[in-house]
Structures are given as structure tokens and as C-alpha cells.
Length: 136
Length: 146
Image (tube, rainbow over all chains, first blue to last red; front, top):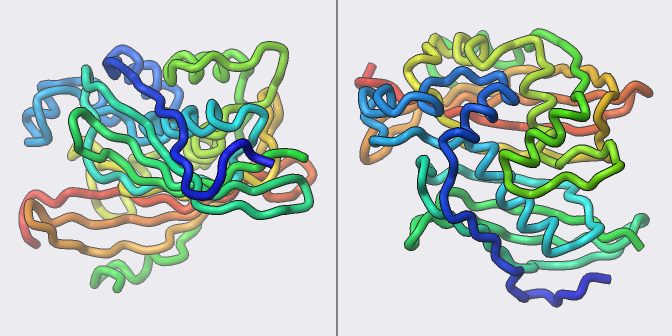
């Protein structure tokens, strides 16, 4: 079983500064040439801000890592995210979550969680639901 | 409700493709996300389920935007993703990818009008089973009311 109970908060994951250089690597990994991740001037021209915009999948990845840290040995079997606002290069972000439910399955315990990514101080960049399988 | 004039794209297949994630890329992603990948294993980060489908499908992001007559240079944004991972995914394994368009819907917010383009993908393991499935959406900002 999990070390957590329903309603428990999960340990937060903090990232002090989202790297614009990492966005360039992620653009290659995603095969996504979208200029908003690479060129701050293009972001300005589009009226979307004054710094490069982090890829949504990266924001999801931070939240996934928070879940993987919270459940060592666990495996994320489902992850759904809504992207609410942009994370910009240099932003500090915090991934947080809580346990919403647990159920037994053939392979172990399924832990259902709500999670979110906050841009300092209080703006949410994404909200997610996830299921983590804790092998028995 | 599907945007008028785009009913024809609902259910349109994406170009099928395949992908092998090299082990080195697993480590690159770990570096981007700031969490080392476990040594001595080939299992991929769960985000690679999304990435493998996004990159393995034969339709590029620009191609997806083109379904909605949207230029990728106009800055598509991710609206949502839903990934279900049915089995552990591994580097150095070839997966097939298939998918189709789900819908294109127009939305008007306080700040802008945008179209929500939704599509579905499947990552298929060598034994023919679904390794992962996804339903994702892009927000396509429209510069002015059309």
C-alpha cells in the first residue's frame, strides 16, 4: 500500500528557474519548432509575453517527477493535464499534489491524485489528475 | 460543436508512423526535467509516452495545425493532454503510432478568440497491443474574429 492516506498532501517539487536552454533541447526532443519556445522577440511580437514560453509537456514532466518522487517504485499509468497559463523562461515553479483515492488492482494499489504546477507566487500553470500504480 | 466548415476533418486519420527512442534521449529528457534517469534500465519516463506519440506519428505539429488552416508560426499552445500508459515503455524498442482528428471547436474568451484542435493517438507495441493512448488538444489563437 501507499504511505499516504486519502487527503494527504504530497511532497512538493520546486524548480528555482525554468531554463530557456532546456527549452531548446526539448524542442529537439519534441520535434517542435514552435518559435515561442526559442525566441523571446517572437513571443513579444505575438503578444504572448516578453520571455520564451516553456513547452507544456515539460510542465507536465515536472508534475510527473513530483509524483514519481512521492511514490518511489510507482508507475504513472494515467496523466491528464489542462494548461491554464504559460511558464516563462526564468520562472520559479512548484509542483504539488494530494491523494484523492486508492483502490486495489491486479498489479497492486492504484493511487489517484490531483496535482498542479504553480508559478510563483500563486498562478497555476496547469492542473492535472493522475493515477500511480504501486506494485504489490 | 465542430467549427462550421471543418466537419470534414473530424475522424480524419493522421499519417501513421513509428519510433524508436534511443537510450541517450531518455537521459536528455531527464536532464531537461531535472531528475536523473535510473541507471541500468531502459524504461522510459512517463512523459515519453506523449513524446513518442507526438514524434512518431507521421503528421508533424505543423501538419496538425494545417488541419485547422493554422500556421505553426502563429504560435499554437497546448490546451490539454491525457495520456494513459498501459504498459511500461522502453528505449530501443520500435513502436507504431496511429491517430486521428477528434474535433475543432471555436472558443471565445475574455482576451482572445481561439480554436481548440483535439486529436487522438495510439502507441502500439511490437506485439500489437496498445502500449499507450493519448487525447491531446492545441489552442490555436486567432488574431481577430473571423
